[in-house]
Image (cartoon, rainbow, N blue to C red; front, side, top):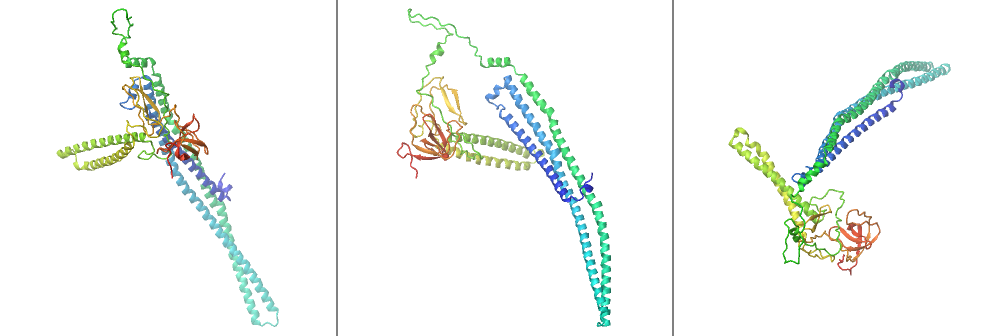
Length: 555
């Protein structure tokens, strides 16, 4: 079974087939490459996940990990980190054992294929040249024979004519002889070219083409074998990490088996036990006797005397709207201008603190390098002071860079703080709410505080007073007095309000406007008495009633 004998006339099809084989190999290379990228991405996500849930140093979370369940969870995180490392190993082995070798092999395969088909085309051109020479000699032989026949006929005609001179007859005879000789020479040349072409054709179809096609067949078979070996390696790379992955999973199981509810219960007792005895019975106080109140030392009078009835605020609790959780597809701006002012202020403050910490590290490093340089100056045998100049210059440049960066963020922070109202000021003048000082409450009062992600956290306050703090983005619905409509709006696009405080609208829908955009990009609207919320201002076309209270006139 040889391509040279079976496919001697399929040069073009073999050329297409071998190119298809290279395309298949390159497709497999691309597949393995994407697999390595997936493994790296998966490992990175696992590491980030493990890092995300690691306890933060010097935080309350770190104290929680004395419990066996939390320690088991920490062990799970560590094992997942090792588990991610095995996926990185898979990616590295696939790249080194398959991708690198196959990439070089494809280039060599292309060169080899190009060489073989170049030889094949060269042989084709040679046999075509021989064929053209044969055809040319054949036509020449045919033409000379016809010319010789005409010359012979002319001579015979002249010889038979009694009116023709002897010289003309002789001349015709000589011309006929010349034509006959030319025909003989053309015949010999045609015969020679025919023999030569037959010889070249036999060599072409029985020697040159079979040899070339045999090399192409071997090249193609080697490609197929190499692809199969790569697939085996692909499986082995995964098989090699299975034992280590099994150990990681065994570690998680072992950690889970170490969880002990009794131990954790004892830790709770040790953490919260006060050591006091429970209060005794309260003695009967007889008011028929002279006023004399005897109270047991173990009574709860002291604690009850300090406690007062918690004042109740009128009305229902007011729900807060946080429609500012936007799904930004692009990268967040450096100055966090996409966030509401309060959240932006927190982000900028956090960035300033981070830059100050980094600057402090660099300053400590500068101090250490300066001390080391002084040591080198006093003791040259310990080192060359000049060798530290480059590092010192680099640290100073880093400090200057961090200082400029910190100044930039501090300027943004000052700008934001300048726009935010003071804590004691009233709410924005929207005609909706008035800031009411809350009555004094005891230690059972709860202070509400907004978190950056728009959720609420409630903490027990030990203060004697609770003040209602408000910013431009901290609005509340008043259940007792609904806001009046100041206009209408038409939805230009459909908006799916999934976040707290937003409302879903359909394209073309007409709704009431109860609060216009205050510069944050959101407009407050109402569908009916029970449905109201925020939508992006760019999603609606607003028609304000000029006579409505608080409405602005737009030109």
